[in-house]
Amino acid sequence: MLNKKIIFLTILLILILAPLLQAEEFKNSEVFTEYIYSNYAEENFAEVYENFAAELKRILAEEKYVGFQEQNFEKYNLEYTEIKVGEAQPIDFSEIKKEFEYAMDFGSYYQLQVSYLIKFNRFGSREERSEKTVYLRKINDDFQIFWDYHSAIDDEKAAEADDKDE
Image 1 (spheres, rainbow, N blue to C red):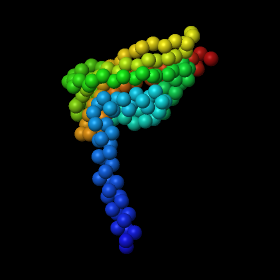
Image 2 (image 1 turned 30 degrees about the vertical axis):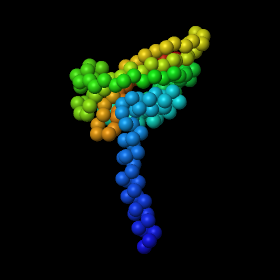
Image 3 (image 1 turned 90 degrees about the vertical axis):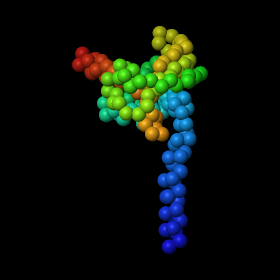
Image 4 (image 1 turned 180 degrees about the horizontal axis):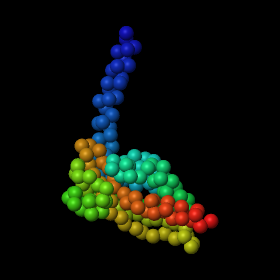
């Protein structure tokens, strides 16, 4: 009987604290974006995918996204460092819809700038400073990131065309 009470209290405690820990981890969109880019730089693509907007996940399978990113990182020997996340600015849904036709209107939307140093090997080893606009949605306490999936789809179509030519 005592074991059942301890197990019940443990489960109850986990259920109560888990959302609080999640909310604290991503207390704002800047912290969330740092988390995403840190995982991306460390090639944790499945974790990045987990934080995609729900409607994007319906269009692009995790395997395609992860495979696409793994292939690019390997092909170009990519390395992201010196990642800096700017301050998030609230934006209207219409701005999101212009960028991402798949977006649905619910939640709050933000954009922010991310700058980084990218090292790569294409016709010799190089590095460039780059900046990108990132778009996010917040629903309750959860953040989601939008991504232009066309490059992964186009890359797959190009590979299929190469296969047919052989």
